[in-house]
Amino acid sequence: MVQVYCKNTGTSKSVTEGTTLYDIAKEFDFNKPYDILCAKVNNVIEGLKFKVYNSRDVEFLDYRNYGGRSAYCRSLSFLLFKAVHDCFEGAVLTMRRPISKGFFCSVEKADGSGLAEGDLERIIARMKELVAKDAPFGRREARIEDAIELFRGLGYEDVVAILETTGKVYVNYYTLEGTPDYYYDCLVPSTGYLKVWDLSEYCGGLLLRVPSRHHPEEVVPLLDQPKTFEVFHESLRWNRTMQLKHVGDVNKAILGGHARQLIQHSEALHEKKIVQMAEEIERRYNDKDNPCRIVLITGPSSSGKSTVCRRLAIQLAACGLSPCFFSTDDYFVNRVDTPLNPDGSYDFDGFETVDHRMLEKDVNRLLAGEEVEIPFYNFVTGLREYNGHRIKLGPGKILLIEGIHALNPGLIPSVPKSATYRIFINTITSSSLDNHNCIPTSDNRLLRRIVRDANMGSFTARESITNWPNVRRSEVKWIYPYQETADALFNSTYLVEFAVLRNHAEQILGTVPRNCPEYSEASRLLKFLHYFTPVSDKEVPSTSLLREFISPR
Image 1 (spheres, rainbow, N blue to C red):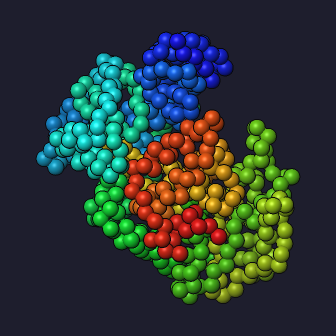
Image 2: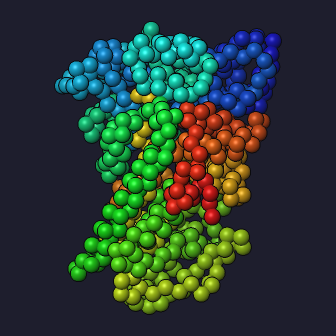
Image 3: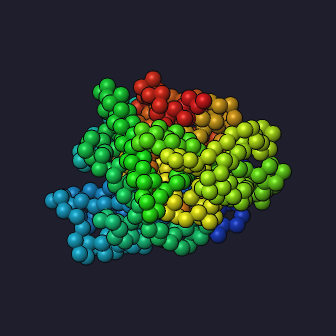
């Protein structure tokens, strides 16, 4: 017998060695409004078929937890793949990326054609049939050479490429009614768990919609994002041109000595976009009827706002304009006046954290031709100070305002929209691990933040991970609702970003103690980073946006 401590109940029970997590969950009585999907075992995510042979701490997770949602969505991807595989022999399903509150994907039949009339209905019917059968997901462990031989024989070269470059000795893969597929982490026990989803046509492909985080019994409402989708599609076209569809392709290019070339291409794409934005701003600045006088720049945490703002200022100067700028952070209220979160901690991300009334007043004074002293927020003392930083919008001058609330319509409501140019910076990852494993949307930003915080000495990896859910909640509430209102969307990702971050992040993540809750996320990120062949940051130019995170000033 072994002892299992259940964190959900705060109690322990003795169970027989080799008992699965699925059976152990039945032994503990706690509120289970939704299906248990997986569990943390000693702070590491495991599937419910995991067998316990030693005493362990266990925390059971449902869809409301990130680990549970991830297991559900991976399993749903396998369900869709199996349905496509059964309906159309030789067809290729590609899971592109999370977008519009779902997963954008495409299907290419063996003859190179896409889906025809009635095909979508066939796929949905087969998915529902598999769910009704409650077919089990099998898990197999194999030597890496055997797994490569299996997937190569099936024609899954995308999986072969990632397996050949990971350096693993053994690997797990999964099966569903005899059909094998590869997923980088655990699945739910069977298809019967996958009751809530929707599949529809979207932007020339399909959108696989998943349950709502807070109401898993409902499909999350569709959020149309045409501008975001176009930025993603632009990156995807470049990847195709470079023949770098998946991480395995990128790894092989790096191993072939092409890392510097890939970095140079990414830098060139960034600079090209910044030049285009600067030229459009210049054109609108010189519009006699509706001249642009303010550039508003926003984006979620660790998207690279500060670097983009500096590089845009240089290009605007090249266009003959004289930019001056400040951050919405400069107008933070004094710390004693900062709103509080429900747990009593300071809410540094809420809109009322910024004295937007004073900011709007100063902006209107600038537009009226007055000279204005811009405050400086002292994060050490928690006070807004005035240190003689004065600006004036004379001829040829243009104002850049950067910050997480820059696109909020309540920031400067009295300023005509025609007088502003709005930029949203995001990290839209266009590559995937392979055809069926999307890269989680915020992982590059989280890794950027962890590395920057550690290098600056501001927060440990554990503290950064602890605070990340609060950051994400604030982004959903205060930043992303205004993404589609932007005049320009800037994608700040790099094709080799994870390869560069790996050299920094591995050591930093290794400092997270195994006995703390944050170890679960640290362990997941470390496992994820191992899929990327590392690249030295010596290859990254000093002006690169990545320098904001790997060598912050």
